[in-house]
Picture 1 (cartoon, protein in one colour):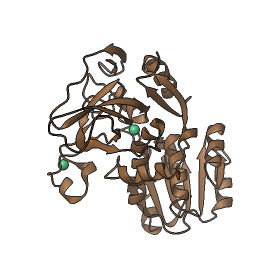
Picture 2 (spheres, protein in one colour; picture 1 turned 120 degrees about the vertical axis):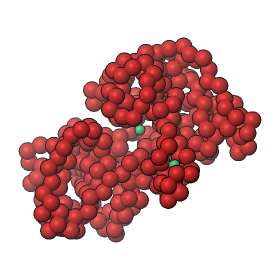
Picture 3 (cartoon, protein in one colour; picture 1 turned 180 degrees about the horizontal axis):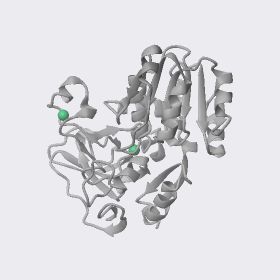
Length: 339
Ligand SMILES: [Zn+2]
Ligand SMILES: [Zn+2]
């Protein structure tokens, strides 16, 4: 089969490799769509917990084409989305409802072969059946949306909270829609690319502000005393540092964007004390695939406009380079598509 390989950090090749073997408790999924995500960039640059060589790809869905002999809940022909996070189920964190902090965590497309390939062998327990109404493109959004649902579970939005989101990439655009459906009164978005800002508005942002020297003035006009919730969806240290200046007393700050591992930002502890601030992290997802599927199936979250490119696997290097340069939104790879 054809597969994308990261043979070593900072290198990519398209290879012909053996079809995956199906373990007793596994199924083989023929990948219909697999999304490129910022985490793939971190993996490529060896800034994440991956081993090389690696077939990357952790946002995917497809059709079951083979089932291992111990598998009972899935059949050939089933359409599934794959949760790439493999939890052991018996460590202290798994037994305490914190499976995303599993001490024996494995990641499909992170520590074992993923979805940028025609086929992927995955544990049956990682598969979630999809309703027929969910398209292949939507199926590849279940994982990123599940991360958003986990963030909302962490955040606990109160009725009519005013929310500020910094960054309108694919994740920021999912957050806009999710927060509109979670009780926020205002969802204000700051972003440096005008087209992304326009899309944020179309998808339900109550106000959009172009990032720049006069953004503070615009934001103060909307929320003179600051926002109840400020979310960083950029991972950019300078943006994160500034984010706290927009937080009102008793406000909550959510670190959603993935910042480079070794950076530091400066926050004034007196401000945290004086303002009753809450600072929240949100890592990956935790048993949130089902709500994500429900949100997509009900049409509450529109992911169509978030896909800027759908490409066959042969074009992976090209679209990955464009993605890295920030000139795309979500890019989907269709490994079974025409070359
Ligand atoms: Zn991802
Ligand atoms: Zn565990």
